[in-house]
Image 1 (cartoon, rainbow, N blue to C red):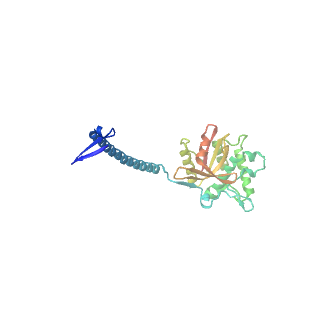
Image 2: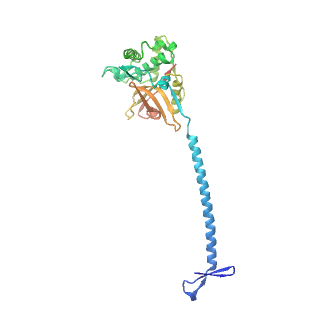
Length: 285
């Protein structure tokens, strides 16, 4: 192909078949150039539009992520918050527990295998008596919290009130009634706190927070079975609830005399799953 310029006019000839068979292809070249110009502007327009669209998407995503973030929540009992402690029983010289431990009862005994409910009740009544409001709840616990003998005696008393059967104490309502009966016998006005809200993750979390906010330990029962959850078919005492900005939720609990940190969503899900017989939460004031 050759280009011939005459003044301001340009012509194009195709000489691929030889110099004597040249062909004027000016109109074809002009149309092609016009097509290329139009497509260039279209592509550039689309590119700019895509850039703006991507910017909008990024901005929208950032706004969505910001909207998804939640306020951090941190509720805990006063001794947990200030000292990282809860019902410190000196079970060995210089060694202190984080609440009661059913393993302190004789090996192989019914109390050892069925005693988690009474231990939770012993934890709660001790804490209310010694920490929450000694003037109001003082008669709920006689003796020294630090003394293993005193606390074991207290666990024995609560075991007699709850009297767990072969399946242990598997009713939150019965648990509350037994603790109230114990308090009544001690001439202490103590009542369960209940909620009529549906049993959801958020509603149960709100209930737990309400108990911790008034410095009242919260008992929790998980009746899941045949799962890989370490705390199935078990009573524990909640001492802290934490939720981060990404909606990860954790609880600190007293179980087997130790402080354990548990994913709250996992704990809730195992209570409500198909193979669970239920469970729940309970605190008193």
